[in-house]
Length: 216
Ligand code: GRF
Figure 1 (cartoon, helix red, strand yellow):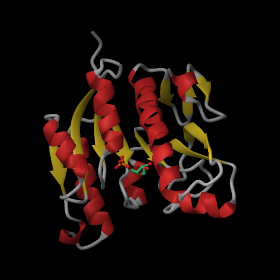
Figure 2 (tube, rainbow, N blue to C red):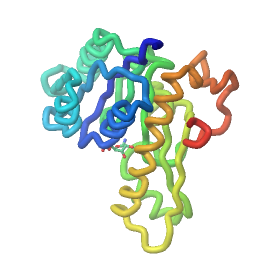
Figure 3 (cartoon, rainbow, N blue to C red):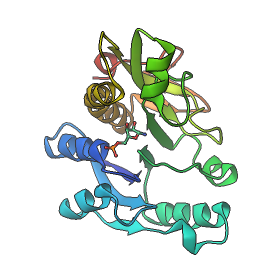
């Protein structure tokens, strides 16, 4: 058996994307080892999920550090010490210092609930509705210093539909996120998706975001 990909996950909230990754691992469809789940919020549901799954956890309080770079340096030093090959940001609600994140180029991915480059940042479902978009979606991208701005490798799309609300859109999209993120991590784990200064899938540059069907 090849060595499973070692992944660390950063999450600030409930952790349903983390749960989807754990479920895929448990189902035998995702060859990864979780080496750390870390959060900037001690109360994050993601930490409880990780504890229940026997994954090492870490909660660091940003208020205990003099500034953002100090917090980020400590957090990322702990991630590095975990031995992670890949860092997955799954609902991590902080902007990360550019110099800190630069060291993880090609080794960190983020899931964002919009069809990037549309709607980086917060309130993506509301902004999609306010714009009258016919389609919404989620993106997985490699992390760079620019917030939600790194190269997009995969997307899932849903129709907005009549009568959609912020909550209903978020709920429907979340179900897609739970397929998209394990599919991307799985493609990295099996070596089909890799980083060589740019994202390559089966050896070819990713010029159009991949779909779950293509990744599976
Ligand atoms: C997801 O919508 C993710 O795309 C966004 O934050 C949310 C996190 O949800 N970045 P969860 O904590 O994984 O349930």
